[in-house]
Amino acid sequence: MYFARLVSLACHDLRTPLATVSGFARTLTRMGGVEEPAARYLEMIEAASDQLAELLDDLSVVARIEGGRYEPARQEVDSLELARGAAERLAADVVLVEGEGAPVAVDPDSVGRALYSFARCLVRHGGLERLDVRVAGGELTFAPVPAEVAPIVLGHDLRDLGAAVGGRVVQALGGAREVEGATLRVRLPLAAEPSS
Image 1: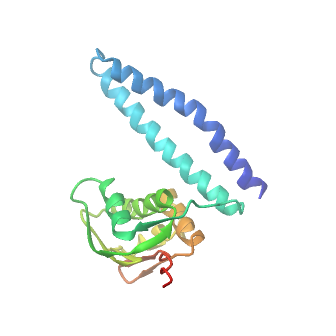
Image 2: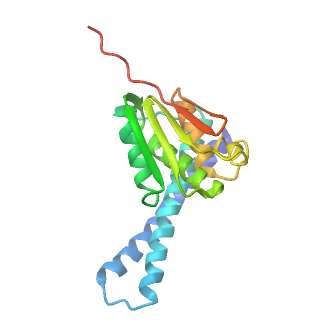
Image 3: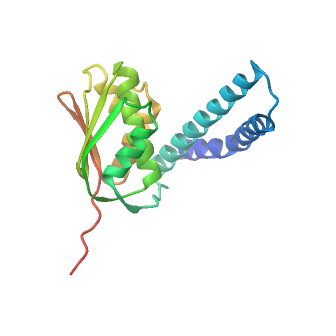
């Protein structure tokens, strides 16, 4: 519990200097008149700042989960839209999303990041040029999953922070994930049916 709170505090405290670095890089870029290679360096600083912000978000969420202080902002969203949003964050034409969604009750930001992290993990560690995501209601399947990548995407082999945190988020929301053969199955909690 102490360690989880310490990590949360560190994430909070790191956001201020990160915002300063990111803000000044963006300001310099918008001012214009920056020549190469300095313009390219500023773009790299902005991209790295965005990556650090995502890592801090992941650490903060998992620290709250582990510390028993995770209070997800559940909303009813369509599972297909979540999958499409996650796929759009990866390079074009790498992830193909198909199927039919259903309303799920999740924290859309955290689950969107989790789905993106699962896809990115499979593409990065599996060396995939193409990943198929099939949505059937509250269940999403990702394929192919190379055998050597299964323990990584499940968080058993801690080589991908995003995938490990994503698994904890899905689990904390009452969902599940597992690898069957060459397929990763992610089950999200369906929104409650309206009573008549």
